[in-house]
Image (cartoon, rainbow, N blue to C red; front, side, top):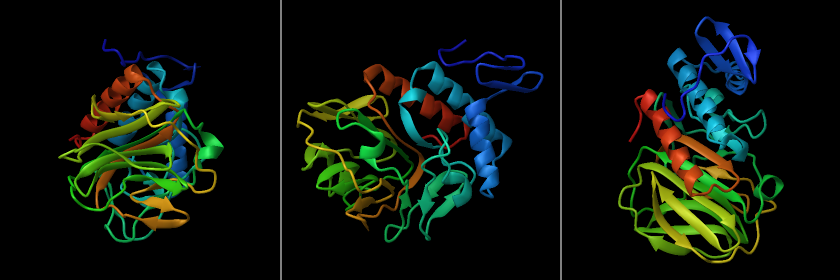
Length: 273
């Protein structure tokens, strides 16, 4: 068996629900399915199987407990894609103008964003946090922020803004770290100390900064597909997103494992890049 494979169990043991012979559903995955249904959305069996397997893998790798919000972007509707896999908290709120499909959610580049309703200071620590997005669109040179918020201190992912890639993560400036020529794939910015923030693309470090953290946003919630600039959306994205998360910081091993798990999830849905 692979590192993140799981065994079929019987009954309801350790958060596993046995529904039919040979079918084991994680209790948190089932909670997500129920929230989607109550909100008026629906999921295919393939999507349910993919979410279930991913949930078990995140738990096996010790990553699940790091998460505050996980948006798998399945179900091809606002009702489904706004749901947080991790818990019933931080259900997203989409503006009008988004396009929903089995591949994820796509902004219009003008007015779209999803409010995660998660305020960093309420859930995260200044030196222990991450943001992650999975993009299916290559957009370079534009004025785009993928996810985040700003209120004196920066907390966002910028994969390519005017041709450069920046880290702005719990300090009051932007640090150009590299140039990402293709903005498709898995992007993670994580901070696990006061003196180091790291950006990963897929399974590779794209750049780091030793800029010391100076604070954490205490007022504004995180937006996806733009950033929350003091309560106003700005730098709206036209990208298609098929996954996003917010949570505590991840170390190098966890970051690598997280990419592998998410990429396996995307591949199972035939939407990997």
